[in-house]
Image (tube, rainbow, N blue to C red; front, side, top):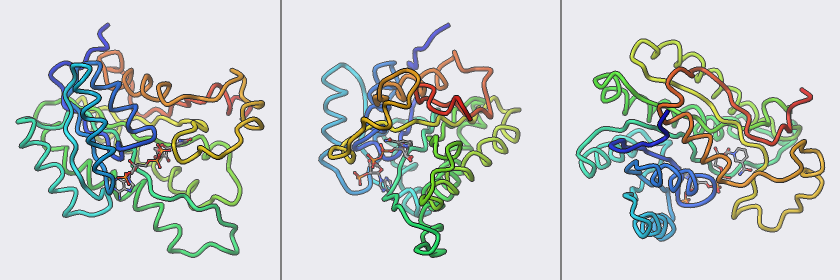
Length: 250
Ligand SMILES: NC(=O)c1ccc[n+]([C@@H]2O[C@H](COP(=O)([O-])OP(=O)(O)OC[C@H]3O[C@@H](n4cnc5c(N)ncnc54)[C@H](OP(=O)(O)O)[C@@H]3O)[C@@H](O)[C@H]2O)c1
């Protein structure tokens, strides 16, 4: 069974840093042409594109706010023009700030802010890539969720709620799109330190992980590649925890 993605076009949202950057590199290493989407940080995104190219891969940085309909339309149009093809693999990964707030502190707007990233953006992007996927009768939609849904993390219900909603749409879309051989799955990372966690102490979290280590971004890249490749042909509507077994007891 091949894990190669030659001839495929992948779009990874929020790929200028964090997990998205590593997911992009993994998919490019497997032979996909990767659209490295970013919102603000052109330099980081272009550095990633250059790094992929220096290893013999193909990637293109394209700006776009995934929460904005017009911006998503432009992003997909540019991606299709530049690759002269349509998107085969969509990885909904982008995130904005994830503020930690108690119930007393939360407003409805805080909930909406998370839904914009984890429900609205996947909807806009999926609608934009569906015509191409339906025409090919093939496609991969991979939503990056979080273990917080299983953990029920306190003081973070804004984020937990939106990730739970993302799981619901993953399952519904998987049913709806199955007859087009389009698979829809969710990958739930544990705490995977990236640039924004640089100052954080990870020892307490690590002590509870059955595999005894923190996850690294490559762990998520590997899981995305598995689901994106032919190895994932018969897997849809699933929610895969990639967290060293951290939610095993739940
Ligand atoms: N890291 C973890 O421990 C962890 C754990 C569980 C789940 N996750 C999930 O994994 C995903 C990635 O998280 P991360 O930790 O890698 O995040 P991150 O390091 O904060 O990176 C966020 C990315 O999203 C982009 N972005 C922000 N606003 C955007 C917008 N409006 N439109 C398009 N892109 C936008 C940023 O681009 P700019 O740089 O251009 O602003 C950046 O590339 C998220 O869905 C997160 O919930 C992460």
